[in-house]
Each structure stands twice: as C-alpha cells, then as structure tokens.
Amino acid sequence: MASVGYVSPQRMHFEQPLPLRSGATLRDYTLVYETYGTLNADKSNAVLVCHALNASHHVAGEYADTPRSEGWWDNLVGPGKPLDTDRFFVIGVNNPGSCFGSTGPMHLNPDSGKPYGADFPVVTVEDWVDAQALLIERLGITQLAAVLGGSLGGMQALAWTLRYPERLRHCVAVATAPNLSAQNIAFNEVARRAIVTDPDFHGGHFYEHGVVPKRGLRVARMIGHITYLSDDSMEEKFGRALRSAELGYSTQDIEFQIESYLRHQGEKFSEYFDANTYLLITRALDYFDPAAAHGGNLSKAFAAARQNKFLVVSFTTDWRFSAARSREIVKALVDNRIDASYAEIAAPHGHDAFLLEDPRYHGVMRAYFARIATEGGF
Image (cartoon, rainbow, N blue to C red):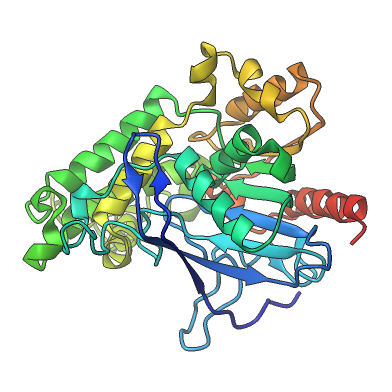
C-alpha cells in the first residue's frame, strides 16, 4: 500500500484568546497541522486524528528533506490503508503546549518577551478539543465524518462527543480510558519528579540558562516506556539476555539488554522532547475525567453523545489502558442506547499495540472506516 508521499506542515494563527478550563487564557497562538487526501465538495469526508503524549500533527507521509521521517500512524493512514486517503480527508493537529510547532512553553510569552517556560498555562484535554474545533471551523468544515485517537488521543476523541456532538458523526477511540487510575497518575508523578528535580530544570526556565534537563527526561521516558510494553513482549524481545558474554558484577554499568534498550529510548527522547511539555501533557492526562461533573456517573456524562456513533478498540495485554477501562466506556454508551461497536484485540504488544500493524486490529479499523464512507456516500 502506498504512502501519502511527501507532506508539509501548515500553520494557522489565532488572535482571539482561547479560554482555558483553569481560568487562564492563551492569546495570540498558532496551531500547526497537516492534511492528507482531498476534501470533497460538501466537506463531509473529513477525519480529525488526535495525537497522544509524544506524537504530533505529523500523522502520515514523510518530509522531503528528512530521512526516516514517516508519520507516527503511517501504517494506518494513506491510500488503500484502513483510513483510506483516497476516500477521506485526514487532518492531524498539534495541540497547544506541545513542542512540535504549535504555541507551547518554548515560544515567547507576549507578556514578557521571554519563553513561557513554566509560565505556560496548564491545558486540559477539553482545551485541546476547543482549539481543534476552532481550526476545523476555519477550514470550513461544519461536521467531521469522524474523530479518531489512540491513548490520550482517544480521550480527545471522546471529549469531542461531549463538547461538540453535533460537529462529528463517528468517534473512534483506541486503547484509551474514561480517566486515569491511581496507578497511572502515580507513574506520571514519578516521571514528573524525575524532571523537576533535575538540577538543569531551573524551575522550568531552563531555556534562559542554555541547558536541558536531559537526565530527568531520560528517566521519565524510561518509566513511560516500561508501561507501554507488555511483560510478554519484553520477555520475548529481551528476556534476561546480557549485553556482554559474562556478568560484570557492577551496580552502575549496563548488564542486561533491556537496560541498554531503555537507556537508548531515554537518550533519544531527551534529544527532541521538551520537559515543560512533558509536565503539561501528563497533567492533562491526569485531569481528564468526564464523569466527575456527573457525580462519577459515566453513563450520565455520555448522554450528551446520543447522536454519535462509536468504535471502541482495546488490546488484551494493554495494562496501562486496560480492556476493562474500554468496557466501562462501552457500558456507558450502551446505557444510553448509543450505536457502539467494540473490538478487544488479542495482541501481545501492550499499550503500543495501537501503533502497530496487527492484521486483526487493522481489519477492524478498515471495516469501520469503510462503513463510514458508505454511509457518507463517498
């Protein structure tokens, strides 16, 4: 199957302040986005893809001047792929607070003339959805065929149905949850503490000191990466394999291949991701809880989405966003007699399964998006 080919990011500037749930506002901001495929005459074939923690607007295709720059969901989005760009117009948006082009902590604060750093306002999933809705409106699209997302992106897809149910027809939520468990919040807090206690963090204003809290970022990524993999996949890939032929009897050197792998992932992450962005995005994960406004009743929360149709997908070995959490979402939908399809995929890869090319998973996605296209007549 073909790729969408070479792509270029686009930018959209907003002068109107964006009100945030915290009570703060984000003013004079820019969103970076990419599009793939062609918007049809009645603008009914658009699909918004929401990104997860360390991803961006670059969903598919590659950049002409950058080798190995395939989009993070390139195996899913493209001509003839499950989300077929010969039929759909696909939009990827980088959220405010990110470090991949949209206004975030690394950009200048118009009030001070210095980088925002730790002064960038706290953002939530709902704030991101509001910003996305403004961009979609600017593109002249009154109703999306679907909003799709995995993990944190899935939370955004769910939030679309609660905030703007009339502006989408389908929600596709993959490997996600209606809120974070205490254990998940704990993982996020340990990662954040690794960052903020790094001597190079400087209270979030490290840009002014010409340093990056790489030690903290490395540890944060290592912690996160462990939770994205299943025990079975780690065992199969690494087991207890040693890096050298014999034990070195060292408490500080790398002994096992899994240690080498995690350090490599941490090092790579620290070279491209922003520490303040990591704090903001993990906090947005912590805060997401649509049932909270309804006394903890998720069914009451999803009463707002009765006009939407849903596909919810989970993976059996995903222990960070377990299948049980997806079933909570499905129950809330069924309680409201909402059109909902559910697929629980037996995949060995843990949470990362939503990014991989599993034939059963892709078969489900292909069939559902074919249904959307048939219903829409495109």
